[in-house]
Length: 214
Image 1 (cartoon, one colour):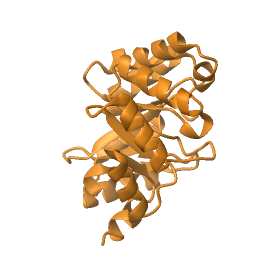
Image 2 (cartoon, helix red, strand yellow):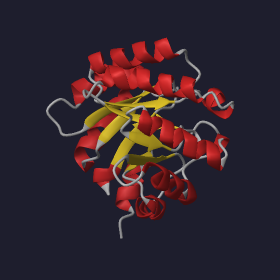
Image 3 (cartoon, rainbow, N blue to C red):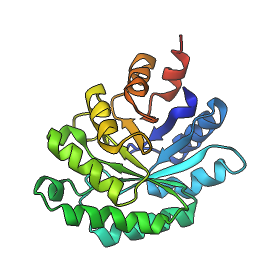
């Protein structure tokens, strides 16, 4: 299970001491990555140097409403600081209005910056979307060259559900990554997401999930 988990701490009140603890836990348990706010990417990269744990950060988080040019700058800065994975929030309002070209260009801008140096995951914020919008978002992310589609930020009143993972997996096909994130608190829920087609789990309850292994 640990090999599927992004060990996450994105609370606004997170302190450097808590980020260091997050990194220590990730190294101890063998999680795929730590996911931290951009402010702490450099600290996490320093603490995890020499380990197999990757450093993931968030772009345009949590609203997705940053100007596309700012997302590009934020992503470039994160890579310079040591991030090797970026989880970007797409522009939700533009998606819901049907402005698919703007959504595509927003994602494509970050993908260009990553340019094979970092994995790009696109957060859809599924709790705010109708089924057809979720499908459209998945197809736009795939067309734009992203590596993963992801359910949620965890900041908009909803999280990952099995039905959304099934829908997203069906939309993107078998080769693209699908990340379940938001409100995954226990081993049973994490296993259900993987069974539904997720290939990554984002959670702040990582240690509890591992300790709950049957």
